[in-house]
Amino acid sequence: MGLIKGGIVTIISFLLLCSFFFLNTSLTLTRSLEYDVVHGEIAKTVNDLIVSSSLQDKFLSFKQGTDSFCLNNSEYVFSSVGHAFVINCSLLDSSFEEIIDSNVERMTQDIYYKEYDCGFFDCISKTHSPEFLVSKHTRDYWNSKFYLALVLSLILIGVLLFFVENRYNLPIWSGIVLIISSLPFMKIDWFIGLFSKLPILDFMNVFISQGYSVFLTMFPIGIALIVIGVILRIKGFATGETKMVSEKDLKDFVRKEIKKNK
Image (cartoon, rainbow, N blue to C red; front, side):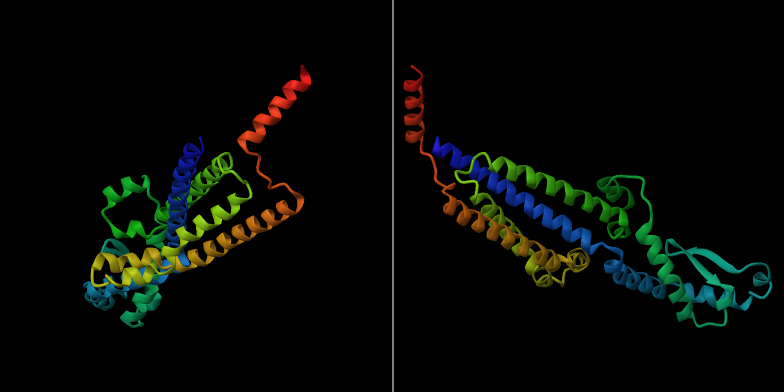
């Protein structure tokens, strides 16, 4: 019976480790895809896209014949590089670089806050665009998976409660598993950096930029759980609550109670 129970504890602990790892991964992606974090990378990509396109020629040709157009309009809007490009008539005397700056922020917000009427994997297959991967839609998806992993982890810890011999060991064991699951995130950017020559892995830096902050969150929580478990054990020893009842003691107790009732 003890061997079976030990096997069940091992299996549940492994599932808890996987759940904690998925929780940390989801939290890393959620934090990394916050607008303030990903804004710089999107803006840089948009800026490079505009500079490498033929927009400057369009701007110069438009600037030469804007007198009549700007009498009745405040801005000129046209589509280029897959996005709406806006030239404000009040900026016609500005440099092309200033025109770019005025569009980068707007286009960055358009990319991030764009609404998608599809699920995460459906959107990947439909859009075929990296823009979707750095959108709020994607962040919300991983945020929901974080809470799902959190609920699953709590359920697994609750199940473990029925199989561990000493319930005071549960916070300690949970803390150890949480710490182990958080360790890969301590150096995840360094690990990806080893393969930075591969374009796809260089792009992945956007999604793991907050990996270390997740480690700094989970590691102290794991330590706190261990400390709580140790305190509970000390308190239990002091009050005599941690004394375990063996199967033999339980059988003897039952026999005595049966004899009393005869």
